[in-house]
Length: 77
Image 1 (tube, rainbow, N blue to C red):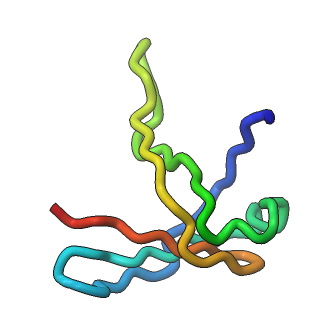
Image 2 (cartoon, rainbow, N blue to C red):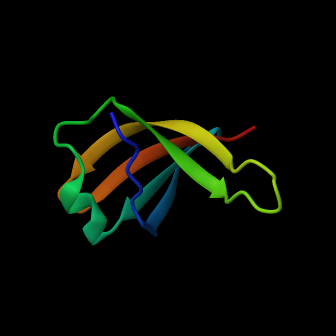
């Protein structure tokens, strides 16, 4: 499967426990995102690669998907 990139914005954040933070990402680009991806995963680019360095990416699980938004949980260390 070919890679797809989605330009998303942080719409909301909320602490759900002392060690977990819920982040909602939204954007019209999600209209082209495959449906029914609750529990699926995606790679989030935290810092683009530059000057021969690789991009800083992490894999996250989609907790909830809506038409123009997805929720992900971040573990706090």
